[in-house]
Length: 167
Image (cartoon, rainbow, N blue to C red; front, side):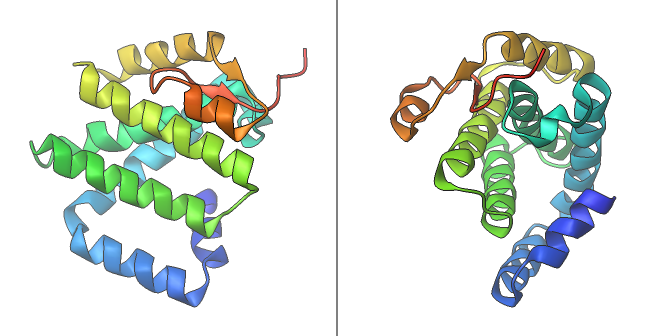
């Protein structure tokens, strides 16, 4: 997948080494993470087109869904939910370190990633279609924010975005 290789190519040597080490430590999680990543990007493209590439509610959807899908796919290989969620956080945080935006957009992405993990932890939803519908519903109530403080105050169940979509 082009998006995945683009991330890897942009990594600095130290980041690449960290990524390789992280993946070696969690080798069984690589395939389900790759599958979840492809699914999240594909679904975001299907539902929102290119708008998920900007800091819109569609982007919030992609990040939250991505984390939930990684956890869901990895749960087929281990039942240790905390291990799954720790892996999911580490690998998606690494993504944010490799492709940094500004502090506000990075914080938004990290918040939306956490929403996906919180849904996995708190809800007993493991069906992909039901999960996708749940995150699509969350897009409708995504909170437009403009400061770090607004993101920090947002609950871990609510998506946040920086740009309202154009009509």
